[in-house]
Image 1: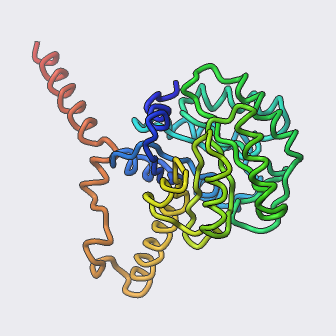
Image 2: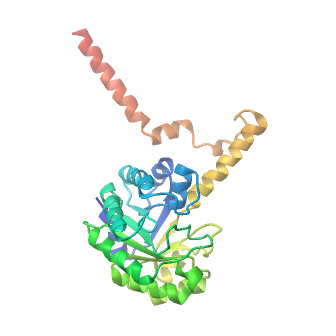
Image 3: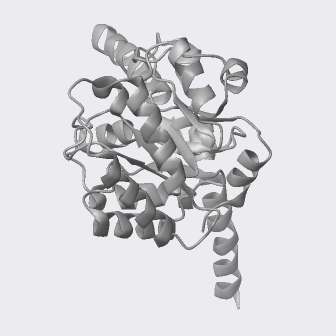
Length: 296
């Protein structure tokens, strides 16, 4: 069931910052930090589960169990990437129903052709805007809970220009999207223009370190009309860099004794994060119960 607190944030005009999650460790760390929303990154989830590029290879079946697990194990509302809806209108209906049943609070659908590509990479092409409008209308009809939010993304900026991207953003909002996501604006000036042109829906900023769009502060984004900023790559980029450092140390020295303390989360902390204290308490309690039964 969708978490109503995210919609309440947007209704109250509270700016939302959402870190990208891509596996259960990242999800559990982020869930404990007090964010208003977590964002399931397609790039990171496909990379961590399949080890391939986010280029339309992953299917609905590949994604739904992982996305459902993120939602089930998190107290924080989750928005999840659903690419193009994994096909046509019937696929979109099936995907929306599946994501909502899995417990996510928001679904992101985009207007790329199949197979889709990551939004900050080249070679993206979009379907006609009218086809995407129908997808959004189907998604809106398929959801059961009004707290389940539809994020409509257009990738038109890169190939067709800013004016067309804004036109599509307006159309998608009118079709029933709760949040409008214009992917890959290439300057702050373009982001300001988007904020001026679309004022009736929260706007989403996709902040990718090293990507095509400038990363503006939370205060500046709010000032120019945005309602949510996602950071899909910040987690997996940091993890990859940390792994490279510690593996290089291990390869060079043959052991981990020289690693700085700050390079490790700590075995005790990771045990706590994964719920081992509850397991140990369960084992202790039932061992005592077994002992009492045996003594009778």
